[in-house]
Length: 436
Image (cartoon, rainbow, N blue to C red; front, side, top):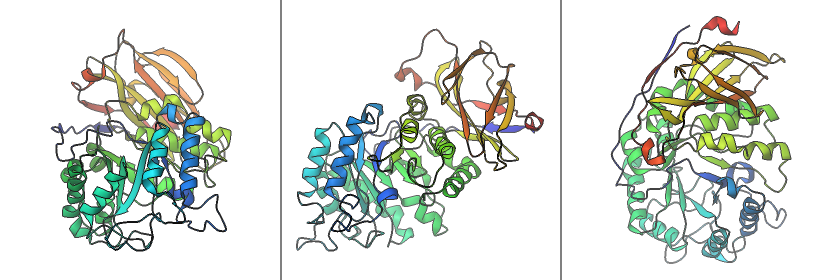
């Protein structure tokens, strides 16, 4: 089987419409939704309800347990934080019982930890949980968020007309810019239009949003992860060209350490989210996470792949009989040859590891001086391998092996130098019989 992988390159001028110069690498942090949902019962479940206490506790743990040192810097509130009705001045009001000190005070506490503060809103009449939306109050809400010194705004799209979003989402971004405070702008704009059968205007979305959702909400299950993997692989020709520094595809939260993923499946999510150049927003109870899952989330080498300054999203380059190979061009770059992160994924469920054997050249790695190859989970260093050298990996069911293949160079270009490189055309030749 011969698989052609051609990077389509769009050189985009600086995006002055967004005017924030933020999210040059995918945002990292902690987000409440998948794990804590819309739990507002602080009387019967005070430790797990959406409350001031929950977010202060998670902010503390990000710092004391080493997450912040690795780049997890955002503490993000999701839905169900406000009162059910606006006040007499039409302002959003945090729930007075669950957030007794207000959100400015909570944001100050998060900032005092050296972290950043994220908030949730909805473009429509109501949030998905039935709380007040922003559609008639966008300027007011943007100003309110800025007054609370918010650093990150997620704008959902429930209870809104998808046809109006091409105007509404840029308008809210305009009002954010008007506040003078730079805030990361996370849009749900395209996913609602896709639901409605509308072809999203990606040029406008890239121009106005730092990141966006383009597929279903993640759930706490391996089957949910698999649908996202399939969506990103099956639609990569339309998805991949949209990603880059300042604007990212968002396949949704990391659910590692919750209830639905095995250890192997958790490793797979982390590896593929790094290949996807996806935001790394953990949604897990950091108070009770088991050490082996914490280690996955804190894997410095995989985080480095995710945060690579080139910002090129990876692609699926092989799929056959339950085996997939995904590849992402990364730094360092030498003479227009890229280094790569390569993920071998086993989607089989037959209960035994699968051997995958392939040369670097078949994976598209053609730099004649060779690549320094390392397994990012097992800390196995293979040495410097030339393109014709075959490499064999053993991949567990629903598991992954992720390799970093760095071009052998004497010096590494600076980040500013990386901007001169643009992805070339690559032909990946992965022979089907390599896996038989």
